[in-house]
Amino acid sequence: MRKQVIAGNWKMNMTPSKAVVLAKEIKEKNTAKDKCDIVICVPAIDIPAVYEIVKGTNIKLGAQNVHFAPSGAFTGELSVEMLNESGVEYVIIGHSERRQYFGETDQSVNKRVTAALEGGLKVILCVGELLEEREAGKTTQVVDTQTREALKGISASALKNLIIAYEPVWAIGTGKVATPEQADEVCGIIRNIIADLYSKSAADEFIIQYGGSMNAKNAKELLAMPNIDGGLIGGASLKSDDFTVIIDSAQ
Ligand code: 13P
Image (cartoon, rainbow, N blue to C red; front, top):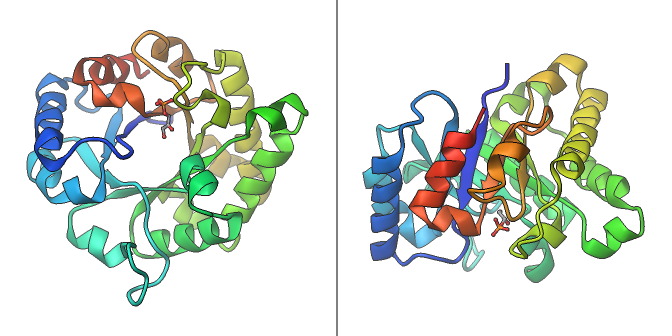
């Protein structure tokens, strides 16, 4: 049985003082206990303040990116060690916004995934196609390439610390959610890739999230699909009431 993982991606929202308010609200409203795992991926500058609020609870702290080098001349980047020392357990890697706006490639994603897993972080790896790629019938090809490239050199034993989030780019921040069937189909394709690369049993245990305009209204239906094991939520994770409803929708 796979335990669902509900993760919020706050993106570039919430100053430290606002982050404290939101994290406290999420903590107070959360009654999920062991039903699902809960992660909030906050801006780097919010990490220390949010850590103080969620430490010792079932809400796990996540970052939104990490560099592959242990240290050095990489202005603006954060290392695995920095995140570890700050109480961060999860990190998002390869988000489409990083790929689109910050030149992230399948190769740099692979290096970041490798370093994060080696350093003991849990990784939420994002994959997903653009609208024009879907319309051209290339969804499977795009997701296949992104997944295989990102996982190059990753051992089967590291998979327990890896989640893949299928996030179709056309559904992110647009209010245009994938239908449960569309989302489930691609999550199933990803599961088959894991089976092909590793084993059927590894694929059966592997957590695959859907992300893209998931909200309090549509979460239940999406999370009920057989291949969807959780959500990576942007906009709706910034409102504690909505995020709590999504947590409560986990199976
Ligand atoms: P939205 O939920 O705002 O569409 O964002 C999804 C996302 O990109 C999460 O990483």
